[in-house]
Amino acid sequence: MKIKTNFIYSSILTVSNFIFPFLTFPYISRVLGVNNVGIYNWVGGIVQYFILFSMMGIAIVGIREVAKNKNNPEELSKTFSSLLMLTVLTTIISLMVLFILMAIVPKFGEYKEMFYIGAANVFVNLFLVEWFFKGIEDFKYITIRSIIVKGLYVISVFVFIHHKEDYVTYYLLTVGAVVLNSLFNWIYSRKFVHFSIKNINLKLFLKPFLILGTYLLFNSMYATFNVAYLGFVGGNKEVGYYTTATKLYGILLAFFSAFTGVMLPRMSALVAENNFPEINRLIAKSFDILYTFCFPVIIFFMFFAPEVVRIIAGVGYEGSILPMRIVLPLMLIIGTEEILIIQLLMPLNKDKAIFINSVIGAIVGVALAIILVKNLHSVGSSIVWVCSEFSILISAGYFVKKYIGIHIPYKMLLFKFLYAIPYILICYVVIVLFSNSIIMLSVAGIASSIYFIVEDMYISKNNIIRGFLQRKL
Image (cartoon, rainbow, N blue to C red; front, top):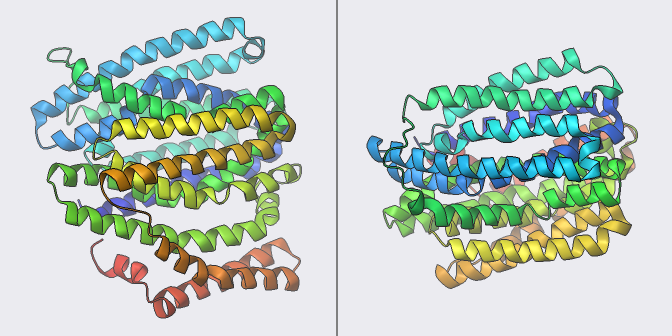
């Protein structure tokens, strides 16, 4: 399947991942309130950390190894069985630690009912095996299944969530969606592979599984740890502010992440073929796509963060505005990171370099969290996240240049920024002329889109949009 087709399916999936929550989030934020939204996200954030530990490096190693063996059914089943057995072991350890903490940490005990639901989430993720379908590049199935489950989830939210105290039910519905996805995936996976304890080779995958798993754990230290630590020192309301800001930001980055997710198995295959000319071409295209869309989006939401928060989350979430503005540059920082790490270092098996990146980010993140979060709360958490990701970007840039000789195209970056400056004028004029939030966002969005098309097609003469529509990527 072509990258373009996969990207379309992945983009549809990514859009659905945020359109469906957008159908529920304005409702949920108003019904539950910022405090209970904070509780939901605090428990969910901690449980997510245990899920990360239970899955370790499977999200990366799984895609990479399945992509290598997808044309060999026998080896594919062996690889699948070995990787799944590794996740069985780490899931058992993860659940044991979670139950111990539920017994000895008072705040865990305060929300014990939700943590039991979270424990079920940890267990069910074992059977999600999303990495397998990404490895065989079956993005069509992933997309169709996800849309069906999310549609059922949205309906359930409006049927069962009506009161402020329904945040436990809301979390149960969220985990229920994971259960359905896991059930469908496990049944469908049997069409391609079968699980067997025979010929399992844990040793072959153990090292990258642990190294890349540690990378993901460290990489989430300044995101997941931020939420957990903020809950302890700042309270549920501050968690509500921070998670609302980062949820809105996540929508902006998701479209490029869809492209990156498609590129990992393709890059792994190209590395196996030693096709470096094609790798260089696709990397240049990746930077071009990122920078083309990044600057106008950042500028737009920097100006209209108050209106976006007010419309999406409602009254009482004004504390999310400044954190949202602080994290917006992460779209550029993390987008560049994903190119360097996911599209280059991971397919090239530079696991040690990836591990070092994560250690640097974790050290910066934890140190700054201890210094800033206690006093600055959600604003401090936002600053911590940006600084941590920037430190990883610098480290990843160093290793990519050292091993491959590819560097960040600073000249392209500068030109894209200069071409985006008129967006500042457009947004400023719209704010001066209009006071209604809906009209303001609509006019600014239309005007910015017109400038974007004219500039991209006729001024900078960039062929990304035209090329994507008319040619193979």
